[in-house]
Amino acid sequence: MFRRLVIAISLIGAMGLAAFGGAAAGGVAVFVALRQNKTEAASAAQATPTPQPATIALPTPAAPSAGLRTVDVQSAITDAVARVGPAVVTVINTLSDGTQASGSGVIISTDGYILTNNHVVDRQQSLSVVFQNGASVDAALTGRDPFSDVAVIKVSKQVPATAELGNSDVLKPGETVIAIGSPLGDFKNTVTVGVVSATGRSIETQSGYVMEDMIQTDAAINHGNSGGPLVNLAGQVIGLNTLVIRGNAVMGDQAEGLGFAVGANTVNAIGQQLIKQGFVSRPYLGVQWQAVTPDIAAQYNLGAKWGIYVTKVAGDGPAAKSGVQTDDIITAIDGVTLDDAHPFINTLLKYNPGQQVELDVYRNGQTLKITVTLAERPQA
Image (tube, rainbow, N blue to C red; front, side, top):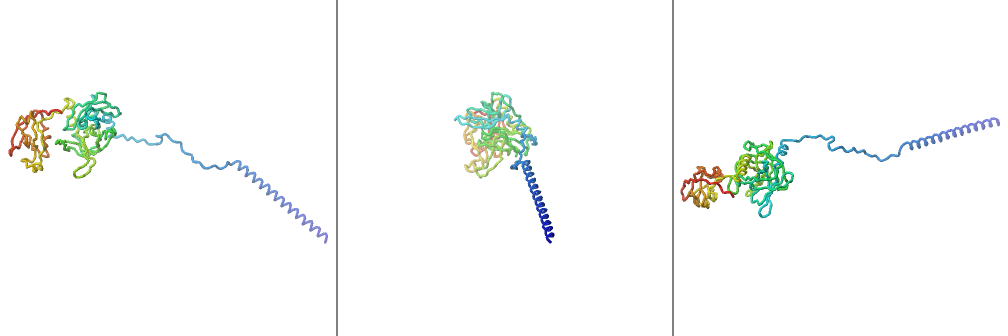
């Protein structure tokens, strides 16, 4: 029995030692494994850098033209502007009171002749022009014509460019045109584009003269554009920008795009006379007058509905020499009845100095026929 107990205890002890040994071996294995894992983790930590905040790499800026498609936008309009633009000038008019007015003009010859409007140089004391490049030079008046509103001035310095005159008789409504000038005198060589709205327009002036055969355009024209060129797509000057109508003051209507230019053919004919002789040869009758219309005739109980009422006769003029008197009413010239379609000045200007014309004159209830030899209009 004792022997069995000893053997049992021995077995239990052996098992305990075995268990302890196993546990110890397991513990050592776990320790070794943990230590190995910790060492590996430390090594990995040393091998992997500390995470940094994320950054975005920006592309290196390219040259301005790199990768961009270049489009050739050259057109008939830009070609025409490039051709005529250097010949366009700003005209500065210094008046007798020291104030200044400005307009535009266009150089038409290498001799320095410049076309502009008569009203641009009116009452001038001195003139100067500013070229496209900003250079300013003195100018002198060559001649002017108040009826066509055309004037020619001249500079003695070398001009940067000249413009070519085109044929305004072949213009058609809808044709693209370009206006170049200096609106308000500040915005030099401004370019605006529009179309020919109509041709053959007539505009009545304050002097009783109707400007005929005008070109109407919707190209923007403002104060200061006067005298600048109206250009076709061939780069030719086909008109001289002259006036703009903003609306009807009586009716209160407002309008935009109603600009008018003197046709190049008229400008050329007038300009050549101004260059050649300093004035335009115009016929002269030698009377001061007031227009007669049906309303005026009814108001003053006049015997004629249309014509001109003679308020004064120049003592040495053709009318006085032929027997025209104050208070006469001239109703026709060479059979052409004076009315709204045939104003007196326009009808008279169809004749030349030295020509004879027959006047229909209403006097004291009778119509007389008086023949007059026209003289040359005195120059102002």
